[in-house]
Image (cartoon, rainbow, N blue to C red):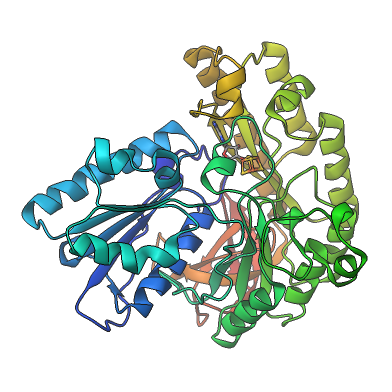
Length: 480
Ligand code: 5AD
Ligand code: SF4
């Protein structure tokens, strides 16, 4: 995902990730494209690992693929349209090569189930997010001439024992998923239906994966979950229990997100740790104190607020008020003073008035986010909002409000970046800059992209950079 204030529509967020070639252990090759959230990109690495066990290599060349998989997103309608366009392209390829197997993974698979197989007949395999271990069997079924589907959601599956194949990796940064599913039931959101109930992964497997990445030269891990703050381990894999409901024994051995974070941070001061996504109703001061204690926990929090209006927040079932959210922001500013903050914002939710919209704008003014992901509300089938409320804000009103949100964010992003000019930051180098081979690009702890002349530095180095100039999305500097 790119940084900077940006309307993340799927054209941006869901740009296809083509997978790099890996060792080929049989003659069959899989080509995977991923759309949507970071969790999907992380899941595709798990899928590649499961298929590698059965001898499949990966390819970034569609024409040499035996199996094409598309890991899909259902969060907004546009995301699904993008995937459908890709399926048309893959079906054209199949006309040329009838033995090509086409599979849909992830949220669209879970949402549409066998519809894509039986009614639309545009795929051979449909696999939901908890059924990836079944993929080798499902591909074999198709090879025998059957269509294959597994969309069973699990209460236990965390893929904790699977060591992901790092795809398109820069060898420096990697994702580690720590929870799956979501129990929050925000009324606008399909995720609880497509990804199922919340489960936390065994901390030992998380720590082992992080340690292993560090030993292999990685210098940054991002802990992923729909709501990382609700991570809770109490000894058994499976359906989330809440702390109040634990037995004394479970309480004694429980590990919450703050404690997990501390353990990951202790692996090495040279391993940066990031996390996403935080939830305002669950983010604790205990966690913020852990952040403040360790320099290698990056000073950046993605804290979606969705709307600044209490009436809309209630309708969204977000579990907090505007005042609660502002209190969380005050705590961040107090405990982790140089922390950058980003948000997700939805314009034009059901019944949103101009006054509600002004509340969103004024909350933005209060926080002055470093950047935001900003969306028009998109009604999703079978969500509570679709069943209970009317999607009654006209499209042109939604778009105008979204534009006002974007304009405000652009101003704030530029102001934030201008305040970094003249300061010095430690940058972890991730890649060559897009503009020039003589420049490197990396990020500050605050997650802002920095571009600077290469000199003798290389990818994976920590470099102290003096910031000389900026744009809305990028800082420009030189190593000192
Ligand atoms: N319409 C628009 N945006 C949505 N999001 C989730 N569901 C919808 C929807 N139906 C946004 C929220 C969430 C982000 C991942 O996507 O802002 O935080
Ligand atoms: Fe969706 Fe809300 Fe869960 Fe985020 S916290 S995945 S918006 S239900």
